[in-house]
Length: 260
Image (cartoon, rainbow, N blue to C red):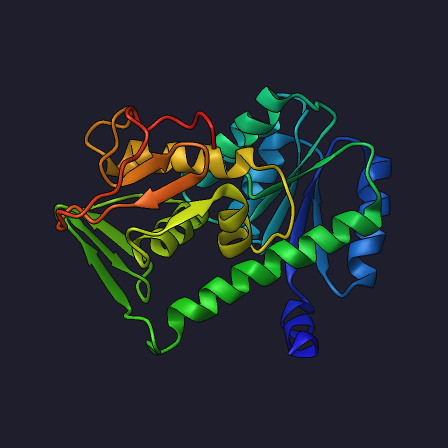
């Protein structure tokens, strides 16, 4: 199975966006040796043009770019595309990482980094994206293709979410997180559980989960500060409550992320 997954990655197009020619040269060499096709861009506007024209399978995006920075580039990408984005950053603060996650970054790597580690991250993120795509296109198996929870209708085959008949614009990861939780109403998951079950990571920054939960609440809840569906269970994690069900265990009074 692993060999088959690697064959699926062979020839995938990666766009490298960095204004440092040495970084571009070294990363390109490693990625091409792993079987990827590579395009390069040294500034944000060229990158956006190439994303529109070349439709890469993944973007490696530097945080600090001339003109507009990587955060704004990612926001513009997310306005029209769900292509996976790995951000390279020399800024290590939590606020900086959260800003990237809120913009729609799928993973990030701190500078200085190993080109080999970047290659492994690219492979991991792409495998995950392809697995989600395959699951969405495959015939429904033991799990229903359509999940209905109160006003929410989640279609995993069409990869759509409707709230009271209104189509929601979710990122790929937001969709995966919502579908994962909505399939298991009433079950509490820690952030570690969700990082593993949704992201497929055995370890990582737990603020990734926190940020995505907050963004999901802003899109599916009538009042994101007092969520009724995606609730916090104090000191442990999160639970999805089916609005159509009257059974509900105690949760955080204001639905905030404290203690999780």
